[in-house]
Length: 134
Image (cartoon, rainbow, N blue to C red):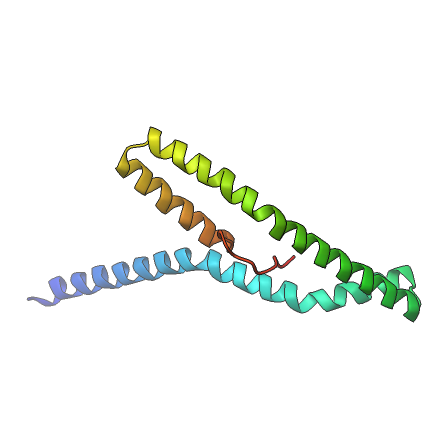
């Protein structure tokens, strides 16, 4: 292979490598950003309460009472979610049964796959009892 031909193949290979690296970075960037932003939000969370208490000029006694109220509210909301989850599952199951009657097996398979991928992006699927990070 002469020098010009060899160099043109090297340029093509380098362009392909750059394209593939750019594609991979583009595909991974949203997930990396979400993970990074969630981590930052968790680190800021304790500061949010302190910022609020400073802004409201809460006394130490008020801070304790507000923390207790927030904790009790969180517990009650989690209990409500667990209590209502079976009804949601029943409704989802009914919808799935009706969809299976309408869609072909291939369509149902594709629908199920895309739904699971969507749940993975949101980070929450059925049966996930972990409380949501806010």
